[in-house]
Length: 614
Ligand SMILES: Nc1ncnc2c1ncn2[C@@H]1O[C@H](COP(=O)(O)OP(=O)(O)OP(=O)(O)O)[C@@H](O)[C@H]1O
Image (cartoon, helix red, strand yellow):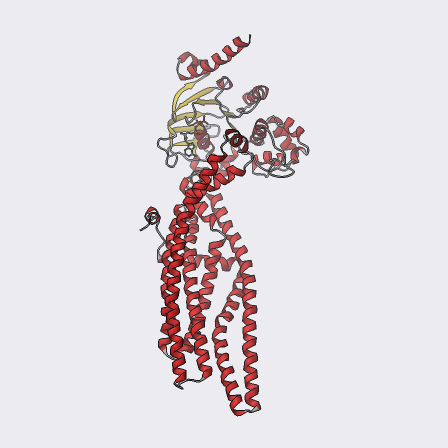
């Protein structure tokens, strides 16, 4: 057993019941997606399936009638011979035309089915809740399904059609050969079998190899992106990272492909040996037919027909087994698609649009949250009340759980322990859209959408806002008016240099757009700002914090710059996922704990800088 075999031996292959169900689902999908194309391909394939036997039979008639015409010299025999010659040639020509047409329709089916499968994957991904979507195993499943989305389901449909086509061909040729001897039928089947078995084992091994290599493939894709990305270029060039990146890329390439190449090599040589075996079987069959003809038992025409049937039968067996094997391989990959489609979409959510205690705000009761695979809970034992109109400041070291708390308050995550209520109703019982409408959020990190500046703001309401006035008002609140004024087409300027007509913005300018995006939700009762001013200049920061402080909405502000939190009604200090302290600025300073320590360090830094400058 090779190293790679043992490495991925635990990757299970789907059983026969599952594979049959998946095959049925893919066929049903193809029929639903392109019924006309499927019908055309099936009809043309049936014609192509029956043609070889008919051609062999006409070939026999040609030879027999030509011989009869030579012997008798009669005009009727001559005409019959010419008729069969024309019929045979016509059928061969039709078969070629049908094959060409089938290729054309198959290409159309490939595009349509690929699109349909991609739609299934995207729709599934859009339905997953954030927690599920972020799981590494789910991301892996999506990558696997996407990698083979266009090719494999289409491949499977085609192989199933081809299988049926070759089966019909084989049965018709076998029926012809059986008139010679049933043993001849056995010969063509025996000739193809060893090749098939070689292919079957190979498919499973390659599937395991590719599935097991997904993390490496993802890393390879990432390195490819790193080498061509303009965003990564400044650091990459300055750090002189190219040799290391290239070496890693090459290393990964060899790791991914060496075993692959070795297996293909071994498989090809075994294939050559097995072809020799099956060729020997068929040569024996031909010699047998010729000997029977020489003994005078069958006519010359019959001999030609049987030899053609044997040859075509050989091809049909090989093709039949190849399509069976190819179909099996496609099915293995299709199983990844259905494994993705079968993933649970997260906890069931409610439908309520308001709670029984309006104005009660958020209550967290013993809330805990653990990320998939996390070695400690990101949040633990959080009990807290945020009444409507309250201003809550949150501080804490990196990784202390601040952003996680934001995701819980917005309803993007549901707690692993305890519960959160809004206006007296558990967040899980709210309709997610109603919950999302309640909050205007600046996330950390925020997105830089490669859309127009206006669309970057309109995204605050899922691109549903087209009123330019509303967008400009939001830009005003988010301090982005100066950014828009600088752009050649204002709101309509496409952003990102990835487009030839696109403009690039500075970090702070992007943040101003992200702030405007949050400020577009003027009717949201709660404003959640996760490090809203990290990239702003001091004037911008002061102006924004002042505006936020004046808001009569509930404001939840996360900031490492503690001076920004001074005006909060309550400041929450998180430490390793737990509440370390809470109170007003004054009470926390008087307490002399963690907050005061952090505050004084920061203030001391500024004071020393000021003294140094003076
Ligand atoms: N998507 C995720 N999957 C797994 N673990 C995560 C994820 N996001 C955060 N974590 C982990 O959860 C913990 C809390 O992270 P969180 O982002 O909430 O911290 P934070 O207080 O906002 O930090 P910062 O000040 O750096 O923004 C960290 O230990 C982090 O490693």
